Amino acid sequence: TDPSAALALIQTVDISCYQNYTRLAYMYWYQQPPRHGLKLVASIVTWMKNSYEEGYSELTIQHFVTVTTNNLIFGDGTKLTVIGTDDKIIPPSVAIFSPSKQEIQQKNKATLVCLASGFYPDHLNLFWKVNGAKRTEGVGTDEFSTQNGNEKTFSLTSRLRISAQEWFNPFNRFECVAKFFKNGTLDSTHKLIYGDAESHAFGSSSSVSLS
Image (cartoon, rainbow, N blue to C red; front, side, top):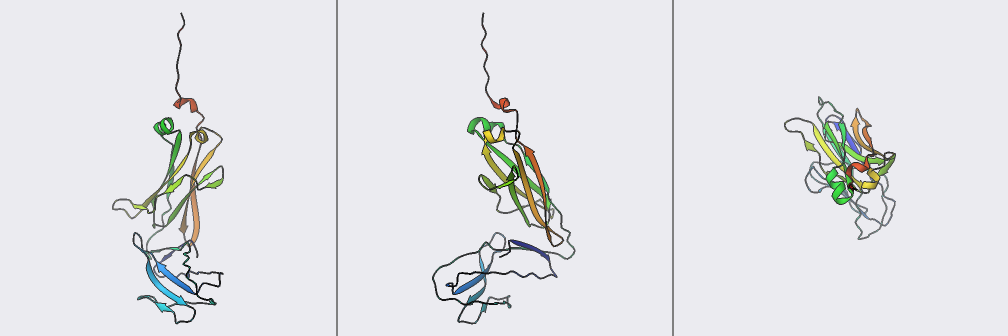
């Protein structure tokens, strides 16, 4: 399946699913509204007529030949966002906040926080890069965006936890990338900071007075 798509009310979108494991006899389509559980949309069985839930009436299958099995495999899914015809897409502002001194001193860890704010619609992905390579270890991203008060825009936060040693390397480059749909295409914006060279600022010191 496609990872995500955004469209206006008057537009349509095709979402495809393909599997090449020919022992699977069943295929199900589910919809998951924000903050809700899975909702069955359609059921496809090789030897039966396709079944659609209320409100759904069309499904195209080009080729589907399988035999019975009890396995159940879920794909990654497609996030679909529908916006009003007069709504304007607003790209996010991205900021990175440096780790706290207390965390470094007490836990020898450093957590960088990325905040993407002021975007619309609620259709945005955040990920981290370290020295140009995508980083997934130590990353935690909020499951849902937060609406900004009475405004129509949203905010989303992601955190990257690294060792203090990795943070105290001024040659390390930490980048937060926000991907979003704009005018039917995938666009991105990013923010980056470098590691802190002043490692001694968080260390301890002592002095000896000789007489």
